Length: 398
Image 1 (cartoon, rainbow, N blue to C red):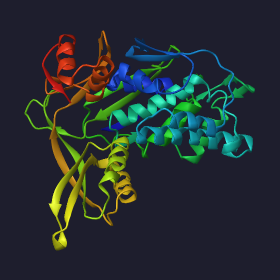
Image 2 (spheres, helix red, strand yellow; image 1 turned 180 degrees about the horizontal axis):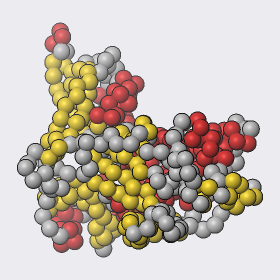
Image 3 (cartoon, rainbow, N blue to C red; image 1 turned 135 degrees about the horizontal axis):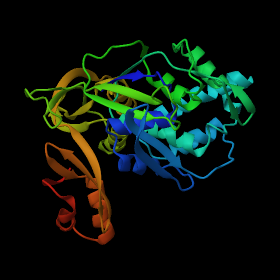
Image 4 (tube, helix red, strand yellow; image 1 turned 90 degrees about the vertical axis):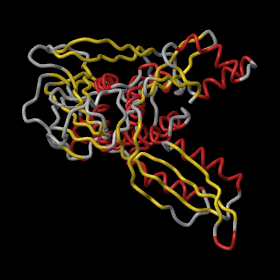
């Protein structure tokens, strides 16, 4: 999916997350992912509302006020302990590092010495981790952005009254050469968290760039000022193209993927387990091992990994690092696939993830297996007991 960000009302962490949810991120799935963070209890509030006549989603994290001062290393440890997929962890750490480096420059300190307070508060951690998870979940491969509205005036913060834009915002904009709009709207429109997400995400700053618009997502700011729509809008293009004349949301589509392959005849079979885990953690779509015969009649395997086109180099490096192969073949391809969505189904034995594709629901196997283990049922028995709670067409576990 490719994006174009419209920044006429600026950007904040909650506006960005609202736009992602409006684009199709499943709320319950996001909550489930963020529950991996070891934080005091919190609640995600999502409301549909309007700003300047434009509808969108307003997102708020209902979290307790904290006075924690966290170093960057503490925040990174918190993120690493959350068991996020590898791309999500990398993204969240990268965004916080952008913030730390900017704050360090402003205060004349190294990034590692910065005490985060306002950007280390719970809602910022949830905003940033939620943003990184949403970017990964939506399969974003390219992002353009128009000039950023910085706002004007002053704002009260921990250190007293500061001019708008905040010093950390100015430093990120300067460092990443983010173009800005010449006239400032009254008030704070660009927050350090939002601009750090923008700096991490955008690979070009220019208007246009999309050949069509398949989806839109609108995230609303907390204020409802007069005179303009306080909203961040994301225009999105699906990278695959529907192959039926209708091109509808439920039609199969072609999407670009990359197939990585390697022929291996000298690796301890026990090592494939860790390689398998690393590949799926990093975002592999599929991993296969095929028996084959190589030179001198040696038994061997062909390792084949299907990956998103944007992650090919990262996953190829994992294959090199965690196997004995001396090289990895990289082959761009297209695959015909059903559009997929996920939902959580509440059952008497706990929540159950269901993947919807082609009009058929498939239970997430790990959820099915967990319930079977807890109840000491067989997989088949568990599947039958869960069937009444699924609704619609159902084809077993996925």
